[in-house]
Structures are given as structure tokens and as C-alpha cells.
Length: 180
Image 1 (cartoon, rainbow, N blue to C red):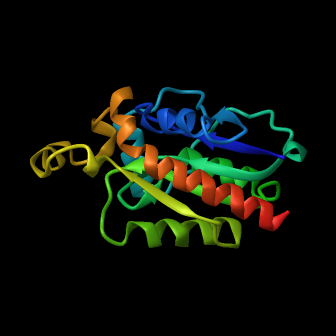
Image 2: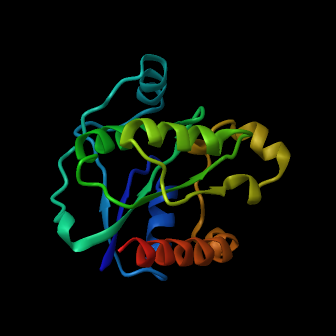
């Protein structure tokens, strides 16, 4: 069966990651969009007030997929809230799943992502992978960027992540074949 990639991307960094995954997986891609343009202020409001923003509906035929790959940025240890909305709306349809993010890594972040997903879906993901912007820029640049949303990945920089993408897609493929 095919894989399903559902992603949210504010700067198109995670869009680029989603597209690169399809070189190694037979997958359909759906993008989470919102009725209104997202801004840094809306992101901050979501974090401060734990808001659930409105998203546009996606027409997904869930019967075609054996594994869902959720991809979204991380803001202050939290999965982007449009992805949270999607998960809350579709949690009964999401079977085997993984979570990937292209972000600035922080100590303890991966475990916090796993904990959020366990709360929202009632079970751990098959895998959680962080593709770190930190691997692309100097420590001085990291301090200037502060948040991953202020750094836009270039296509040629994605080559840095190819070994991790290959390993992650192999892991997802093997997890799906065992679960089926």
C-alpha cells in the first residue's frame, strides 16, 4: 500500500522535506492550509493560548494508505498548531504513523514531540525524526535565527539530509511491512 504524507509548512522548509521523501517512498502528499494567512503573531498566539486554528478540509481516502507521515515545524517545543488541528480532526483515521520535522533542534525536544503525539493520538508514533537546521548553519547564525521559521532551506542544502531521509524512509517502510 501507499504511504500518506500530510504536512504543514510556514516557510516551505517542511514542504521541501515532504517532496524529498517521495524520492524514496510511494506516497501521496497533502498540504494543510488555513483559510487565512499565517503570521508570526498568529504562531505566538497559538503557543501562548494553546489555540486550535481553523484549517481547510483535505479530501483523503484513508483506505489507500498503510502509514501516515505527519510533517510540521516545531515552535518552542510544540508541534505547529495547524497540524494539531488536523490530528484532532482525523485521529480516528490515522493508523500507523510517524512524525518528521525540519527544525532547529533543542535538548529534550524529541521527547516532548512524542509526548504531544501520545496525548493527541493515544499511542506513540513508529518513529520521530528531526532534520536539524543546526546542521546547516554556524552556531552564530543559530543565535541570530532564534526560530526555524526565520531560516529558509535552499534546495541544494537538502543534500545534507539525504542519508537521514534514506534511513528514515527505510525505517518507515519496514515498520509498515511489519504492521500490515
